[in-house]
Length: 249
Ligand code: BT5
Image (cartoon, rainbow, N blue to C red):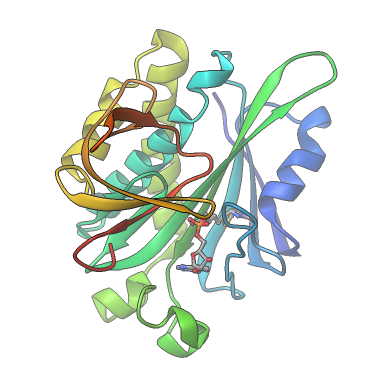
């Protein structure tokens, strides 16, 4: 897979732009923008993407795997970003399914979307947002207690281009293992080893329903295995959020 990086100064959302470009682009196309005016989170939430301060990008992938394994792509994204941060001496934790957390605050979110073309082929858009050089004033007030940037954490500006290259290099390796050999175990191992969820009591939030349970493990599809009073369930990432019982994670 060869990356083809397409850069924008401003765009609504790199995930949206990646979807618009699917008919004319190949796997490995990376849409990256200095700012997003309508950055998207999961479940209709928004993602703050101020100009020149972060990495806001989406990668077009064509993994040729069954639809119900597509969410494993998010685990690959989380593992790749976490390793790239390690490369820059920034130890991070992964909050299943899609957050990277440093010092207890969210520095990165991943949004995987699956698109089916009219010819039947499936694409996955792996959207990655990394807070790199924001100061605290660059975040809306409601995020001050739960979000941070690498600059705030490290106390110095971070080279966004170097980080981008590290992320893309780490991702390619993990993704090709998955696509060519059907092997996602390496990514899942990184997600397990760095998880701040596994082994903890959590609240699982699904729409208006909130259930208490204990996160036990990740299965081979990247789903979270949770033990409830009613039994063990495997939770797919699509429509749920989780909170730790003993505070924000
Ligand atoms: C996510 O959603 O964490 C997925 C974010 C994906 C963003 C990337 S940027 C490139 C690509 N193009 C897009 O349009 N999106 C992707 P979720 O788990 O739903 O978290 C969203 C929540 O995180 C919001 O409701 C806020 O509370 C919080 N949030 C918003 N902006 C943030 C930021 N910059 N840093 C940390 N937290 C933020």
